[in-house]
Length: 72
Image 1 (cartoon, one colour):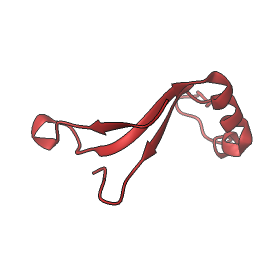
Image 2 (cartoon, one colour):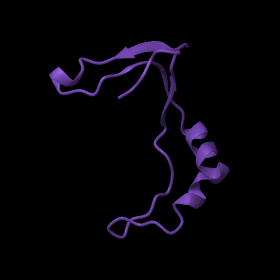
Image 3 (cartoon, helix red, strand yellow):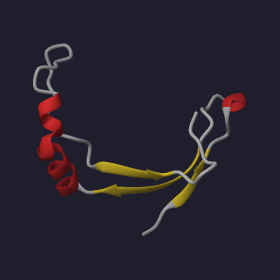
């Protein structure tokens, strides 16, 4: 598993410009560990339409940017 280049079609095609590298993993245990590391405390007093956050999506993405790569 390694980083793969992620580009986009750009604003002329209705997409934000993107030029970076990404790893995407589906890992429920990692999502739970990140949630329990303290991020859950950020959402303690936040509710949207009476609903509260109970965890993170297990589809975790890591992005890497080289010196001239940007996301706009």
